[in-house]
Image (cartoon, rainbow, N blue to C red; front, side, top):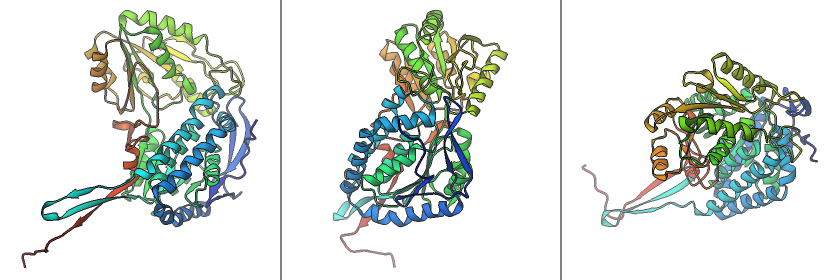
Length: 485
């Protein structure tokens, strides 16, 4: 079993560093509520050191060829895969997610991103545009400079890699701040990148809470900010970045709809609803937490769902037989329990769960509400926990209007055997990431992100390259240059 205690609190300019003057941040194992490690928040001098290192390292890193940069990223991907077991154990201790989940969905996803963008690094070229009379324009794709990445606590390893991989492939350097709730995993990513040959200062990790993030975002040495987090946090960071005209990527929250039509395969739809509500104990930004079920099959759907939920194995997430773990923190658990109480108060009917599990740690039972109406708080606000709202509908037109009646637009899904209807429905969804007869897949080859309040920009795929680089146009005149005077 890996020792969760980190070598030090931060990784700056190729080395672990610490400053005990920084505020202590206890690392709590969510399954027991006990402290397993401790880090210190970055002090102003350490923040300055990290940004200075990133700024200093950036020109040389950008000057390397794409294949050279890509080779380092791909080597890091190989190292992550070789160490998947220990990294997964660390992720489980950091987040509380079951080891059976982290073994297949966290470090491996980070490795996929490093490998994918490592492969793309050699392909980052411009274009030649022919004009009249032999004149032409050529374009150069250039790095932005220093990027700041701010991570969320639900996928700390994956998010660190999802942000670092395209940034580094394009020739940028990065200072990454994990969530203060999960400060451990990104340090290992930095350590592995260094071992893979990444030059010092190219990827740095500083830990801390909101004030550390604000210091990074507001620093004039920073050219780009990429945040994964809540909508309220995203609005603050976006505004702060906009004040200095920085590039941004905002991957924020949602209250995503999942629509189940009467012709759907009910078992497949139930599986999608479980994946879209209870994977990672419901702590996934794209979760389809408003499950609209056509009235004729609602009873059958709820019955099958309640039956399937009895198979959830709640327990120590380090046990590979466990399939459902705790919330990340006591605070998040209490937020979820308050939402459950609100749902009961508003008249929704609990079909399954509804309570804190009778064990140590921050466990909330997988909870399903039926008889939910669109105006209820539990149907409007992002809960970020294992709470599913099931809403009945009659017609396609009706459900599309209701599904889109939200400030969010991260994801949406539909279950139906009628593929013509499926494509018509996803075309009508006001969401950036949509699913047909599945839910919450996130391959690195495909763009991921939202619309409306759910975000700006896209992560993963070739689209991410556009968000971590800019195009310079160079006009070349072959003939004489004329002027009116």
